[in-house]
Image (cartoon, rainbow, N blue to C red; front, side, top):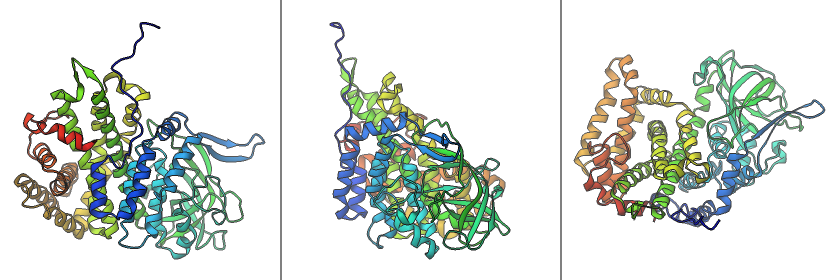
Length: 548
């Protein structure tokens, strides 16, 4: 149509290096990483920014998994069909070493940081396929507590070969892992689980064998090769290694009842599973299942922080890209003072989240379990909580276009609340922080030691650290009910001083000043884009640093 001339529309965001154009990630690798890993991360970043990868992400999200419970002849299949784009996304992730490989690398190799940076980069393409990638990474530390089971599974979980077909593990070059903890009657209260496990010596699996009977309410990525599951023995909740396929090639009883119709994360199948005499190998002692699986939970919580930081980052990049190409009232949006205020505020939130996520990964490389114990729980609560409002504000930068699926922000918005729910919702994580503070003094000591490294750099930060640590030490002697009621306030205080301590140590002065002034100094309103004008004066430089 001759009257239909398209102007002032934003070009597609493709053909850029998601790693190389993220200053925080590049600086984290320069600071803590192995220079030999940079080439691979740039390659992954270029692939993540390609039109092909973006198309895969869109296809995987739009074409949801399909459950096939039975064959036409009536036999149970219990298979899930995924769109080919899903398999392409997982294949790249596995091929980039984003699963369990770091657990097989020597100490001092910075393998967990490299993997974390890669996971944060590739998750920006599409988040759902990251679920089995994350659980495969997280299963390894739990399996490594049992040499027999580790010898069977860890090399396959650490492999860079992706083989989606279900076969005996001995016949595969690589494998993926899932987990099944929650049940319909308890959710996060896994001590209320009712799935039973009965010792059955001489079963078709390595180690001490049992048969499990019960129901799992949330079992994501059900086409994985193996699952860490919790079930009851006479001694209490116990952890088991449950393969989908037995060594003789027969299917382990694993009846998929339905797939969840989720708000976001739609490319990833989340299922309900019936276990009926399902074979499993015991992992750890009877009655110590929570203790056994806690290392897996800690690793998946780290990935929740990484995944949320990735969602924030992609939302920010899309907002900046749009405002650099869209004009209104005679000027580019990015040059208008109020929009610059919003974007600067979003940069501060994203940069602090990414910096904290990479610091947590570095702690895994260092073997600093005391710091990780508290800092991961704090980071999981805070970064995941901040994602939804941050993405909502980024979406608004695109106006009505942001609310349209084809522009990418709508998918990010549907994804944004997820990590705050998975691996323990906000209250569960806040109470876990309280538990660490009151029962594991070495964790609080390590956390305070990290904060001390930033003392003297900013008076406002020093005062905030004093206040947060006073709160933390106060719960040790205060009323337990009041401590629980105030747990979120405590976690928020700890999170902000931890982020600020990293920002003032590692970020340019304008970023550090704006973050401390707005997050600790009270120089901010209740929504994004309410920074004082003097902080926005450097906004152009802060925005340009975020996405050069």
